[in-house]
Structure formats: C-alpha cells, structure tokens
Length: 65
Image (cartoon, rainbow, N blue to C red; front, side, top):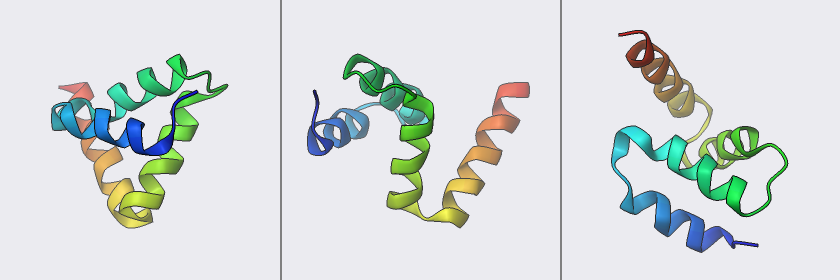
C-alpha cells in the first residue's frame, strides 16, 4: 500500500494537466476500491471545495475540445 506522501510526490512530478489521472492510476495500483473518488477527496482537502470545483470545470471543458 502506498502512503500519502509518496502519492503526493508522484503527482507533483507529473505534468499539471494530468495530475488527476496520474493520481487515480497510482491509487488504483495501491489497491483503492474507488480511486477517482479518493483522488477527488484528496484534491478537496488540498485545494478546498471552491478551487477543486474550478479545476473540475476546467477539466470538463478541456475534455470536450
């Protein structure tokens, strides 16, 4: 199982646009049952509700283009 600090270090090394994807991949490898939900929870704790919502909206917008 991976610990929180090693996950954070791996995510910070990855490019900004794929941080969420990189984190979910790492969490899935670590055995998380729902890695996307866990990544969202970690993001909300780190950035706060408002900033996480802004980033999610930006990601959805970028995905459509």
